[in-house]
Image (cartoon, one colour):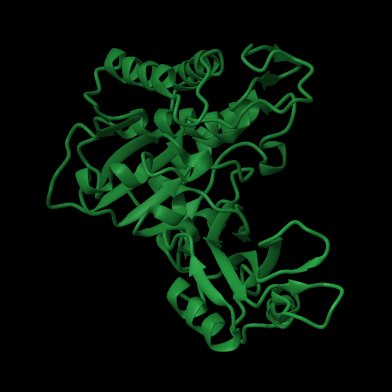
Length: 354
């Protein structure tokens, strides 16, 4: 069984991280804290930009790799904070502070779990720990920037607040910029070709179309038109161009390319994806880690939100202490007991496969 010291060290590290501002792209301070912590524990680590990673002591290139990943960047403090967001106060069993729940508690729990297994000689898998940057903005200088430096990953555990339940699937994200062309004219006369009106049938299609394949865990693909603009601001001019933005949440039943093809076959507007990076991801329900979790009373669900899981090219699961409902809220906190349970859950489930 893991020892009390792992938990005490995890909480102390998290308190130091909370006290060190680490907004996305500004994570230098927490990167140094994590690196110094690993060094103090006798664990060599590597760093690229604000990303830290380390391998287990007896790393064997012949063995498959399990990745432990979570992030140490945060969003900006919610303006409704009533507490100092950088003061790691413990009140009634709650540790307050920006990033305590999302995803500091997960990260320190994974670090504790990594240390628990670090010097074991009997592991069936190698272990790699990554503490990454820019997750909150899906930035290119986060996990994506170090994947080429890591060995091939067979399975990844992504630390995000799930109340230590198992998010076995996660929707991908594709943002589309759509453009419709018309012809300018005076609004008082029967002139021009109103691009806004031309856009309406396509917008209605996005609102009403239903993809035939529905995920058991994530439900249907979801498309939402979220922004609309025209090329002019004058009230008396028929707009020559209309642009709108579509937020598309894709399940594991489709690739982003398949969804994009279906869209282009059904609408008349020009459709340009901003990015094809944030892909749907997940893990088979008969995977040994999932079966072990079910054995220990964990439940499975599909997550509608995106995380670094979308950027990791491997079978993956999202799981960690804390509650997603607290993420990005004012006076963010995590229960100390949740951190203890997080470490315990990670270790118990990994013992099933390691």
